[in-house]
Image 1: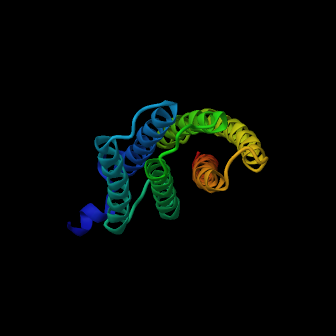
Image 2: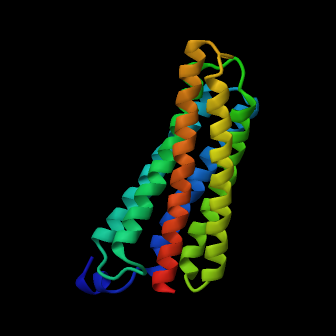
Length: 211
């Protein structure tokens, strides 16, 4: 790459495309997680697909960082791009981790709260993609603010479900081993949901800073 190419902004909003692709990848993993908890059998093919999506998510972050290292001018602050890419990868990993936990633990049933939590995380992943897609139109602060508010509401719903789940979990209804297993999956999903809101909040801050 010559010096002129490095000085010019990348063509076709490539940074935004990388972030959108990463968010879409998260949404696909969330959909798999939701389908499993709704009753879809965990097959070897499904695990292979999950691993492929996880690796693809990592490749989007690597691509973004590579672009940052080879470009002088970026559409938004470099730190914001790097932070968003890293956080999306963490969400990607959390979704994949949840699926792997379900495969290892082989639950005989899924509590109602886990089903609700999975549906909530799928909503969050879809809204995550909406928010990331709005990055390339930072002037649309109203739409970005609305997306952040929706994500905040989803997060509040998720927190309430998590509270009920943990209260039920330690009520004495479940055997000790089941408590440990469910605690693991609840924690991973709750962390992923928190990360989704954090990304949404960062996008809003970027919009307010650059809009």
